Length: 276
Length: 333
View: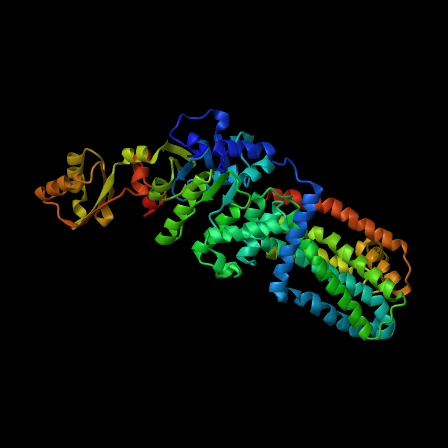
């Protein structure tokens, strides 16, 4: 035997032993490797964390002092209503960044290599989203922390608040698939941002995030009641303020699963079709 | 020698299924435009096959189709007997692709890049680290291993890019214009590296717009123009079609171009390439010595020369000889 195989033999042998499909464990490992890449990127450009650090601080203080008196009579009374709303809003804004960043990233030459490698097509999309879990965590923890500093005393205690945070992170991750999909179909990062804003504003403001639903006209209340963001806000309020697991938790989880089931395959197929 | 020598090119042409790359009537359309218009290719295992053509000829598009990066719109392609369109996942395990623009990650260091691409191809972390180390040494990148790619020179990027294509030692390597934009020294190093790949038992398919590069490296060359193959053969065969060298004349008086062309035609019996507005005239020479005959004849007929030069034929001349027209750039000039 020689160490250098004849080129023809080498090619045929490799073709014969090649894997035909990507296994689930390979997919998970590749996704985690891509997540590692995104985390490295975040660590080297910490300014990427500005939004998730500053938004909770500024929005919490701003909304509490502006709407507190009008909606609930006082800032302290408004906080239990508002904090879960701000968490939902912040997590959704964070999702939007996921799509924009992906679009920017996909324009880089390295994505050509990702495509030329025998790897799961979902890994380059899911990897950054796994890394973004850190951003959702920072955003929701900071929002609760700011609220507590301002006098918010969640009745659900540590467990209730933790559960509310976990639910928000899951929902954020699930909804991020919508924005990832937009990232794979839009022509530019700016387009992603534009389209995302159009989705984001109605979803967050036409919900019960900042005002009680019974103050709304009936046609609007009807939309607000079915809006998944409202379910997240209600579920997070029940968990954080009362420590109770209400049916809203179930609806939120279901909505998340449905969104993933629709938008993850859509994202992968449009990523595959896209030829940069 | 090892058995590598057995199926080096020059031997009898292997049967169809033994080809490294077999393309039959490849077509790619972008809207109305047929970027690749029915190209056949047969790359034998162990050879360096060059695809030569000007910018926009469809070289990169063809390579991207074969690398599963673009959908094949028409025709059929196999790599080591595996259908490219039907089994892209297998093809991706057989081919290492080095693109025209370095496809490495700007935000990571060289070492991290190689580790990342190793991990993504299922290599265990420790082994991926060792392979990265070996490749960094092989490509002379140890000193820069922990610097971000953003600080790399063009040559270093290309080297890293090629290293990244070799992690799993794929049997076939695609190189898209591997030396475009590199300085001559770096270019020579890259050529050495490419020859080394073949010595290790790889098959190489490369595209280039430089005749000398194809000449230096390739065992066989296909010339592509407007998405079609216009010629194929060994570098020697192509050069015979073009002539050994080129006589370039700059005339003192641009108006004397037709007169000079007539003289050239009489002496050499072939048509020169004219740039009347510049007073320039290029013609292929079968032997460099014939230049003297042309110069004497020009003096006898009273055509004055500002400068003259005998050079290796350029891609323009190859194109003129093979297609009857120059490259787009030449035509637009």
